[in-house]
Image (cartoon, rainbow, N blue to C red; front, side, top):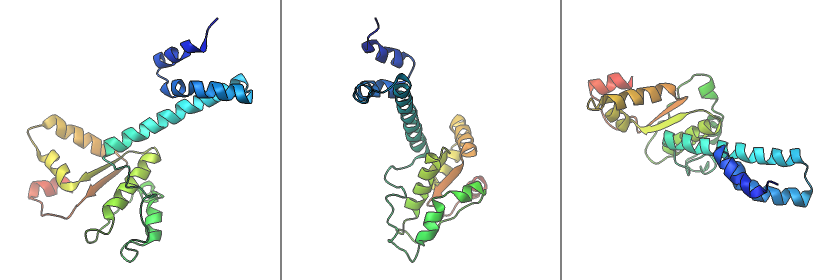
Length: 185
């Protein structure tokens, strides 16, 4: 007779860590609630799907350079209402401008929340299954003009072409030379 102690090893072999992590809890719940086999299996499968979605989102956020603390949930909409209209910010959270293939430029003096909003938009794109990249403009240009590492340059170009949203922060902080301008535009 097969005991449930063998199942975590099988789940690990099948690369199903979400199911393995919740197995004991789900077994207790199934016993207490007298769940049927299909209900129990459904709960375990949901746990695995949620685990995979969570891991994928974490990977997208890390790859994209996003902070976990700069989201729309943590944004103070009352801060600088004169400079950044709360309704406009809420509209950005829908990401409709991306679906419409429109560019977005957020400009204003330092300290009004432009970077927070930009990161929050990128975070939202990742949550919706898209890919976004957040970089300081100067850092991106340094990477793309560094002829010492042609493979790295090619990788950056591929990354930039494949994202749904590219966010360039601190865009106008310095004057660009002709090569940087050409790359940027």
